[in-house]
Image (cartoon, rainbow, N blue to C red; front, side, top):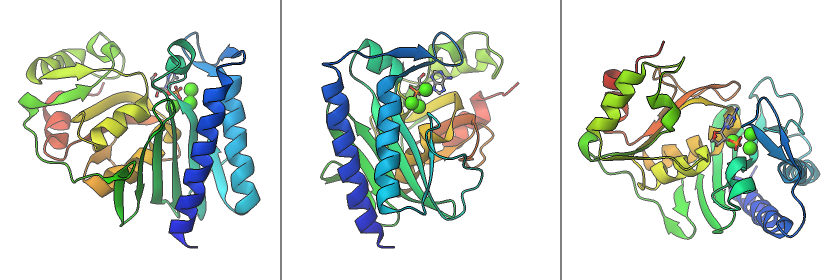
Length: 263
Ligand code: 2AM
Ligand code: CA
Ligand code: CA
Ligand code: CA
């Protein structure tokens, strides 16, 4: 398999899907709830995932596909070639703001990340990486992340985690927020991961993400030296939900060690 050919295939497919999504705003969106009132899905999330599955199956019938909306097969192992896809990351932003949502996907062979993509659909901005060849923001190569002291870090984190919650000691999170320079919350995990990878954020923390939220991002992270793990510091599991942090290598360990106290 020529990985650069697969990369060209993936980009073409992502740009075409982006165009279809932008055009969809002239039609009615149908919005449904999933696990709860804040967990949304639309007809466009589903149609976009189906679009990717049909494209991939037509060119690579033997590849497995794990997608958020479950239109692919039930993937239980990362053996062989596997695509992990979130057709729209930031569905609430998609519904409410018509911006700040991403297409994100990763391509893995035997669990090793080969290709990673995060595409800002409305800005038409693509962050991507090819294993061992580097990472790019559109046509510009992304540089290795430079060290940043924690006191100067800007961190992506949802306000929920600084209030009493079941996952972490929120007092320690308050301490973290007081230590750093500032926080941001964008409502799209993939967007926040893209910002860490390109140095616009220094870390992003989430207490519950799924493989499709992070799959593409973990491949890009490796190429720029960002460290992604769960909150125990273990390698990300791409088959189940888990906690998540991606950070500049100079502060990853410090945040986990000094500020994250899981319950
Ligand atoms: P989504 O838009 O693809 O669902 C903000 O909520 C971020 O967390 C988004 O990237 C969102 O992805 C992700 N997320 C993961 N699990 C979620 C859930 N159960 N409800 C809402 N957002 C979730
Ligand atoms: Ca979702
Ligand atoms: Ca998502
Ligand atoms: Ca999604």
